[in-house]
Structure formats: C-alpha cells, structure tokens
Image 1: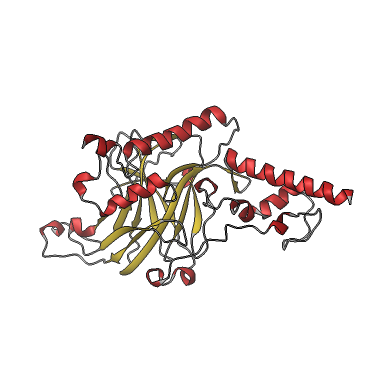
Image 2: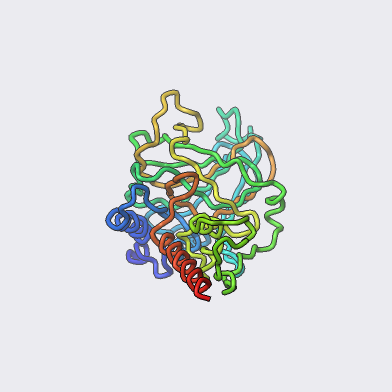
Length: 338
C-alpha cells in the first residue's frame, strides 16, 4: 500500500513528479551551457505521468497519494453558491487536457453560519498537484508559459512559492482568448491537431523561393517562419516544443517580474519581487464578479526564457533547427549542381 502511494503502478505520483522536474533542471544545469536555458515542463498532460496524475481526479481521496493532486475549491467554504469540477479529457484527435468548468455566483447564503461575517463572494479555483520539495527555478527562468483555452473571462494565475508567510501568493492574470473562438466550449467537439505527416516536397527548399511569407534570403528567418513544420516532425506532438493545437488553444507568457504579491485575496502594501523562485504549486482562480457558467481547458505549464521576443528552445529544438538547416544546404547544393 505504501509503495502504491509513492510509485503508483498506473504511473505518476509525487516521487515521479519530483524526479521529472528536478532531473530536468539538473540535466540542463550540466548539459546546457547557454546563458538562457530551454523550457522546463512543470505540468504537461501530454506526458504519461502527468496524465496519470490527472486521472486520479476520479479516484477515491484515500488513495490519492502523500501529496495533494489536482483539486478544486470555491466560495462554498464561506457560504457562497459557486461550484466547479475538473476532469481529464483524452480525445483521440487532440492532446489530453484538464477541463475545469462550473458556475460562478456572487450571492451569499445568509442562512449559513459560514457567511456570518462575509460581505462579498464569488470565486472558484483549481490547483495543480504539489511539487515535492518545490521546483528550484531560482532566477534562471524569466516567465511562465501556459497553454490553455479560455472562455474570454479573466483568470488569475496563483504561484505558491516557498515563503515564511504561508498566506502569501504571487498573482498574475490571463485576460482570456477570443470570446468568438472560445464561445460554447462545453458544446464544441474535440479538436483536431495539425497533421503530423509532412509532404516531402515541402522540404525541397530553394534559396529565395516563395513560401507564403515573401522572399526569404536568410535561412534562419526561414526556420522561424516554418516552426509549425518543425513541430510537425514529431508525430507524438513532443511536449518540449510547446506548439498549441488548433481550435482556440493559446500560449500565454507571464513574466515572473510582473506577478504581484498578495495575501488572502488582497495586494500587499509592501511588494517583494519574485526573483528567486522555489515553486510549490500553481493555481487558477476566477473572481471577476460576473455570475454565470465558465470553462477553462489546460494542456501544459512550462518555465521558459524569452529572448528577442521568442521563447528560447531546448537543445532538442536546436537539433531540429540544425537538421532543417542541413536539409536546406543539401537541397541548395543539389540545385546548384544541376
């Protein structure tokens, strides 16, 4: 029973979560000598262990493990009427994702003893599993990248970090995607990924050729324009590359320097910069004061660096770009010898 709690046979678990994040951080420390390192996946439902953790949502609480897993909270704890649920979606046509949905209500149940001193209500939140011993991101990463699909409402992103003050939370915001795209998420069929097959003719790149983006003379610029093609090389949609699937999913980049220090829902008068991050868990909260249904879909969360407006890729990303660069030169030589 103890072994099942530490290393669930279904995969996932706190120990694997710890080994995955810490292992990635220390491999990069020794192998990646660049001043700005590549991304570190914190939670990614495309990885088997993270998906296994998400499946625990439907299992009895008594066997969920030593560290809290995915969980929800709402204003019912203070006599409110908001409700929410989470579930793992695993369609065949797109990556697995967590769906958090519910109904936000700003009403207070005055008959409840919990609401005796409550003057306002209306919040719901979801929290990721806790990271054992926290993730030592320190000051080596600049931002958080969140791949998600929203309904256009504003969601708070809560970072629970190691601190002497347990009520302190660093908070940023996702302003939401295009409401026209996100409208009716609960009724929308499961989304399809971009094709993972590549037309070999597309790789016959000629210098100065037209590729829908105008004439490109610098191969590095061509590489940037063809990132989706590079990502499509991997039929498993490798989580390290962070390309969001079609159908309303978007990547939001939240710089750590822009997060505000809060305590119990209020901004602290004395702010402390988030410049040495030891991350314990991440949460999302809806508290926009608007009654009604909401829906939020999440695929992945990564710690990233940003250079010249673009996310610094991993060493695997650079290997892919080098492969495309070699293909470019080989095709150029063949064309020149004709």
